[in-house]
Structure formats: C-alpha cells, structure tokens
Length: 280
Length: 185
Ligand code: SF4
Image 1 (cartoon, protein in one colour):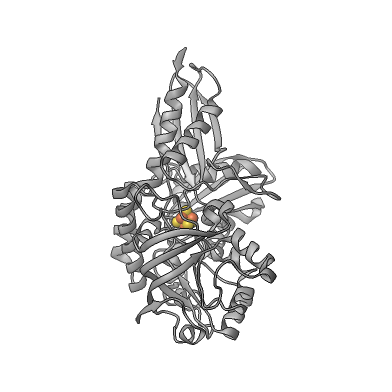
Image 2 (cartoon, protein in one colour):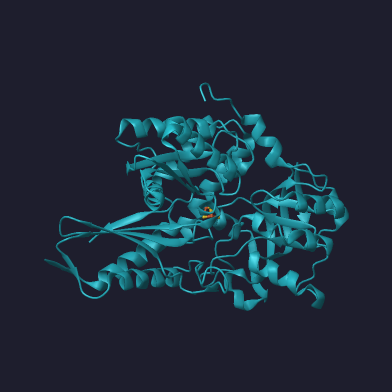
C-alpha cells in the first residue's frame, strides 16, 4: 500500500490545466512545419504561420493559446496498491478550480445544461475517467477540450456489412460536414468497436496520442493513414479557406464489439489539442 | 486586397468589401455570443444596450485578463449559433460580423438585402488576436461573465472577408480549388 497525498493530486491537476492551455505541445508545432512544406494555398500558409506565432505568443506570456480553454477532461489511472486519503474526485475538481482561477483560464461550464445554464464560475466539474490498473502509481492526464470542435463530433452505429470502407466514409463525412467550424486544421480521434458510450471514450483517448505516432495494430495504422490522406484531399484547408492542410493527424483506438454491431465514434479536435500527464 | 477598415462601418462602406479581402480593423467593436444575442433580441423593443447602427459585432468571449493586460485570449467562436439572431440585428443596422465557420442562408439573405459583411478571424489564434486589442470593458450583461458584451478598442485587428454583401462566399469557392479526387475511394 502506497499513500498519496491529496494535495499532490490537487497541485498536479492545477499545473496541468495551466500548462496544457498555454503551451502547445511540440508534436503539433512540428507538424505545422511539415504541412507548410506541402501546402499549396497562400492563404493557408499565412494562417499556419499565424498559428505558429500565436503559439509562441501564448507560451511567452503564459496566456491561453485559445480563449476556449475547454471543459477539463481528466484521465486517472490508479494503481491497485495506491491509497489516497479523502475523495480523489474532490481533489481533481479542486485542482481544476485552482488551475482555471489562478491561470486566468476561461470558465465555460454551465450547471443544468438545458434550462438555466448557470456558469459554475470555476470550470468544475471536470469530466473524469477512472481506470484501475496494477501497481502503486497514480497517473493523471489532463486534456482540456474546446467545444467548437466537440460540437462537430459524431457517433455512427454502423452495420457489420458496412465494412472498412463504411468506417472510413463515416469518418470522412464527419470531417467534411465539420468544415470550417472546428478551426481546421483538425486532429481527429476515432473510436472503433465497443458499444455506444465506449467508442466515444476510445475516440477521446485516441486524441491523447502524439501526432506522428500511429497505432501499433497494422489494420488501425492503415485506417489512420487512409483517413489522413482522404481528409487532406477534401480541400477544406486551414479555417476552411482552402488548402491541403485540413487535418494534422488521425488516431484510432479499438475494442471488441458485439456480433450485431460496428460502432464508430469520431471526436473532432482542433490544432489546440491539449493534453499533459504526470505520474505520482 | 488588403484594406484598412475603420469602425463604425456604414452599409455603403460594407458594400465596398469583397470576399477574399484581407482587412485590418481599427476602432470600437463589441463582443457578443449566444446568450448576449438572445437577450438583445428578446429585449429589442426596449432598445439595444449598444449602438447597433453601423456596429461591428465580434462573436467572442475572452479568457480573463492577466493583471496589467487589457484582455485575455480572444479568438472567434463558431458563428452558426448566432444564425437565429443575426438577421434581425442586421435589419437594425449591424454591418459587420466577425466569427468563424459557416452561416445560414437566412443570414446571407439579410446581408445581401441590407448590406453587411461576415469577416473570419483565425479560430484558435486567441493569444495573437489579443495583441491587437488596446482596451476592453464590459458595457452590458455583466452577469453573463465571458458572455457579457465587451467593448473592445482594436488596432489593425486582422481578418478575411468570407461572405460579402453580394453573397460571395469563400467557404463555397476556395475548397474546390484544392479538392482532389481519391484514387480508390
Ligand atoms: S475549436 Fe479549438 S481552436 Fe477553435 S475555438 Fe474551440 S478550442 Fe479554440
């Protein structure tokens, strides 16, 4: 049994909320450079260059990269041998509260999603996914997610007979319909299999994978590559103003499913795909 | 073409802008998102909380300013959520909308009828756009927090005219230039 202090969780979550919102991950910045080498549209090149300048300005001033600092999505992997005094959920939410207040991040969460929609003023509650694993470590991943892109995401409950082509078409259609709305260039998370809610979870998890790192499963890698190529042939381009840079990356995760189904979730994200982790 | 655009913008001035123009906006502009639009429209009989005639409305809700800075990150939000309200505001005299993403045919019809333009600011470039904001203050609907109406004084705030008052629409024309057919799709 290893005891982890509640304060350590609060502090880690606070720091991750601030850092992920103000510092764009290297893999995304590097992908801009490789897309700029291939980009044909002058407008697109100008936009990509501005996005690079934006990331530099944000990091230098520790200002959010984007004003939509998202809803905080937190993945907790907790080792079976770990003991935390008090509620882990409360500690995570306290970290989010401190991060969004102390980091001058925008509070975008409303309570009662339908009628009153009153801002909770501290960006809580977070969306927390727990996973119990072997060992005595606690891994915290914070992935703030903006809603311009979240709103463009979709779940498709396909039939097994739709096959691989059906899957890829569903993903491409979702990207095409999203068009300029999710601030392209996008990053696309794909969840395959499982059931209704689990494929959505997988799609979100796929967004945590660094750009440039394909799935280790050959059939998923091929799907990722085909989606990347076809999406960038759509012509949508940065901000939907035309070009070869529509998506920076596609990552797919899978899980076994039922004989009667083939769920596909597409979680659309933008170039401000934020995630950071700490292991306690 | 690169154009310097000073606010307020009259309908005549709006009609001189064309899809594809790069604009640098200077002067006073107002932020409003869904909640502020809803309230303005619901209470329009009692008058608007800002001068709507010749106004420029930026669909945005900034992140909080750090001490000593005029504003936090301030990029555009997705505009289709304002589609239900924009035609009415255009009728009352709004001439420039700044946002990102597609607009409905009702909005475009109103733009053509009265003379208004839709300008795209770079979505996701909140920190860069903040450097073009000289001052920021809340002028209405304080209780809405980030969704309150903020009055911004901007200098050379960059954008691209996406839909002009003739209905030309970059979202419909530009992607076709770069679209490629898939070999085996
Ligand atoms: S889609 Fe992404 S870049 Fe665009 S406003 Fe939302 S968080 Fe920011």
